[in-house]
Amino acid sequence: MMQLRCPWCGERPQNEFDCGGTTGIARPPLDCDDATWAQYLFFRANPKGAHAERWRHTFGCGQWFNVRRDTVTHRVTAVYGIAEAGPQVD
Amino acid sequence: MRARYSAWNLLAAARGGQRDWAPAWRDAEPGTRYDVVIVGGGGHGLATAYYLAKNHGVTDVAVLEAGWIGGGNTGRNTTIVRSNYLYPESARLYDFSLRQYEQLGRELNFNIMLSQRGVLTLAHSRHDLDAQSRWANAMRCNGIDAELLDAREVQTLEPRLNTGPQARYPILGGFIQRRGGSARHDAVAWGYARAASALGVDIVQNCAVTGFLQTQGRVTGVTVSQRGQERRIQADKVALAVAGHTSVLAAQAGLRLPVTSYALQAMVTEPVKPVLNTVTLSPALGTYWSQSDKGEVVIGGALDHFPSYAQRGSFDVMQQVVAATCEMLPSLGRLRLLRQWAGIVDVVHDSSPIIGATPVPGLYLNCGWGTGGFKAIPVGGWTLAYALATGHAHELAAPFGLDRFITGRLIDEAGAAGIAH
Image 1 (spheres, each protein chain N blue to C red):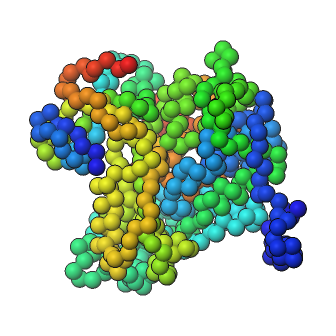
Image 2: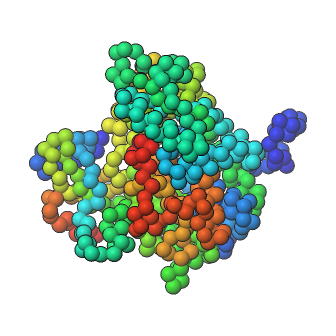
């Protein structure tokens, strides 16, 4: 099973966590048009490869944090705080 | 060479040792220009090519497949066909598909081994019973067969289910769509391929699409990689029927989609004599069972709930599925798993497909079927072919356009039909 390193609890099996999808999406102004709002709500890059995403240690400390993971190999290359900017994506 | 499949031809060919059969379809080399290029040689892509040729007379068509036809999700699903959806738009769409399946073997002259053994959904609580009454009644309002069952009827239908008083998940009843069942997945792919090929469609294998040719924003063809060689193929229109890889290809044309790719796994046990009569689904456990004609018990479960392009499933989901099987069908508990695999599925927020034109001129889509694409192959092909040939959305597909994410008119089958996502 994939292991994730919770910043508070250390390395734990993936089924203790919930994935919250792509991270770092900026909300557009509330008076934006419907197309912009749809992009914000629904449209995602869905990359095959490096993906910056949110995870929550649901069955542990309950904290949210960010992960940069490869969606093919499941290799995690960075773990960082929920409010932090991630490492530069190459 | 014999091309038509019949008992008479089988007998007649026996004299020559069954050696004079024509190949089922022509393994083509790609040309340099087509009216329509379809990316993806799975069920949906091949069906699209067939209906383009048959319904619209468009035969200058190529289906480009990166691997071998039917080798992606078409060969990785649990082969269930059903139309037990809740909303009228979905009911029309999926039941059209099931009605096509009901006569497809005859139409294609290819035995797709359709077995309408019934799709049985179990109710484990009073709330399940209430929800399923609503669900079955909605189906009947939409003109689709559904029958509510009590516990005894479920037990009679599927006696191996754990209906004992000690059952952790008691069975209070359920409902069945008797027209549901299963079909042979590679027969569907090969049947469509054979029929499309006979009408003049080029089916090209080992030909991966790497990008698009674009002129002033319009897609005018594709670039492909075949046996290490790069080449260009011009096309008036290009359609994507690549399921979990739709986002990757669409990004090459500068298009972002409301799709997330997940791994969905399935598994089979070693083959045994007939033990299961129906396709049985426990929504509470997120697991479903059927028995293949070879005798393997085919078991499917929920998604791995994180984005993935790895064609393998996680152990925790497999463990859940196996635990549910041992609990609900205790007499199968000592069977060994023979194979386990995963396919990459294209999940959309409302669990409904996206069919038709895109904001990129010349580029068309058939995606978003998520965990349930196999049952939809005929209607996916039919409606995408219509959009490609006429430039308009087919009446059945009109509610399933990309614009619904902007207008907000979603068709939320995830919450409604209780399908396992």
